Image (cartoon, rainbow, N blue to C red):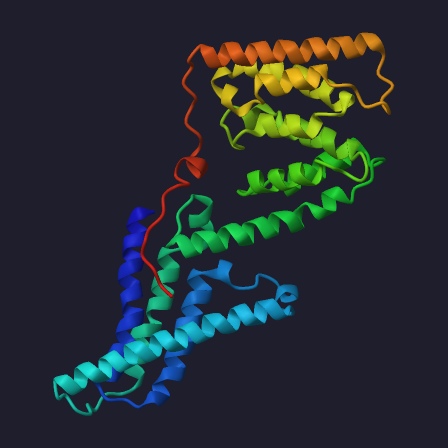
Length: 326
């Protein structure tokens, strides 16, 4: 991926060379318009996160203003490059050169297919690679918005929905690279729910506590997030605790993804929801289980077991290149 980024830098240079050549050859300012169109298409291909992603988004006034700002910035950039080319041509006393105007336009245009072959912004973002800080910020905002929209159907599921239906919906919604963002959005939405969302909570806890999710560390702090979803609901906690104990015993190197021992003890000592009719002996078993899980996490953390490296999706996330394009 790093090699691709370096090649993208070289291919992007062609984008800038086109207006410079046009200026050097003495073409008129009418060439600014086609060059601007090429630059805008380049942005849409290499920076799709900076543009509205759906027809509905294009209908909003803010989307049009953002798109207009992008176009204006490219007009300024092309004009500056064109002016530099004309200035250099004047200093070198090149004069008007008989060159087909298609030539400089073709030089800039060829950067679009070259860069697209070398760089898939969605794939790169999933691996944590961004062309610059601006692209990373735009992707983060776009991904957060996508996550918020993606979880709406889950939140609209009734509590009476069959567990199989809810589990299938949860699995489909979270079967994406940005599953951690969607799970974060669900945690926030379920923090103070207008209704219990019991079926959704059960399905999320079951999904997040699957060995296939926990063992490779696909979701950073996934067990802690599952506990956040279950906390306050004794029935869901009774589903979470035994699975968490078994997973910690099998994968002690994932102890850092679990809730803190203090959070577990606080949950054990908290008063149960008065709306719950859990028998006293089951309440006692739940408290004992939470305390036992807290001790197990402490033991795993104190044992000094080195955590297993996360998959490539997470391991390379901090990497990014500093090549900038307006």
